Length: 293
Ligand SMILES: Nc1ncnc2c1ncn2[C@@H]1O[C@H](COP(=O)(O)OP(=O)(O)OP(=O)(O)O)[C@@H](O)[C@H]1O
Ligand SMILES: N[C@@H](CCO)C(=O)O
Image (cartoon, rainbow, N blue to C red; front, top):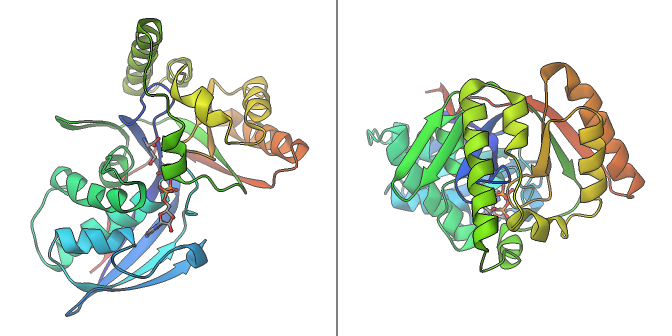
């Protein structure tokens, strides 16, 4: 048996739609795999009632198929599905690493990115890699058609998860089909600022770059209380706030000493909007880890 822990992730970071991602040091999924003649799946943990065990509909089934590695796969969910915290990607990445190890396939972490992205295609119709890349490699990642670049970054974060469900498939439907040249110039400037901030481990620069005028405003409408929660977090000391992935989680970047205050302000603002929520005080963390063979 092989056991792998893969972290939650936050994609987009405002200006890097479908490109940027970060690994969070918590929460995480844990996946256990054992060789079998055909793939079977068992799910425990957070939101298990919403996750199919049919290998054709669970992301790990697509990963097992892509690696030609049939197994009994047990997923212990720590990342709630449809959270905007890369729930499906955590399972895909953990399964890819575990099955690669179990069957001794010899793929590198970079080579496993497109394999794990096959799982994402099962849930959203597109094999986008911006969650699976940080779940596999850790740190801050830039996923493009040409491959993935990963940078170690130590940035304090708060991820606030409301009890609202937004599926990636639905959130992709509201993304505008076009952007103006002004919006493009604005986004490039913000994305470059954010990337430099990650390399310098500077929360202020990362926060300044965590902004876009095209995708985030459309998606904010799907999250009750978004604007109030964002304002509250900024007032409490966050350097930047945006929708995490496809939502409904909201991600704040801040200085380490401000995380408790920022988390409390976000929870209070959701409460004012009559939305129950929980906050993870976290930071940019490591990628998937094999911890039992
Ligand atoms: N192993 C799995 N873990 C989580 N969700 C899964 C899994 N397999 C299939 N799913 C399905 O995927 C959907 C959740 O994926 P979705 O991409 O919508 O959310 P997310 O991964 O939390 O979001 P995001 O990618 O925005 O961070 C649910 O419909 C769920 O049933
Ligand atoms: N980049 C993707 C991440 C969610 O899986 C999106 O925002 O739709």
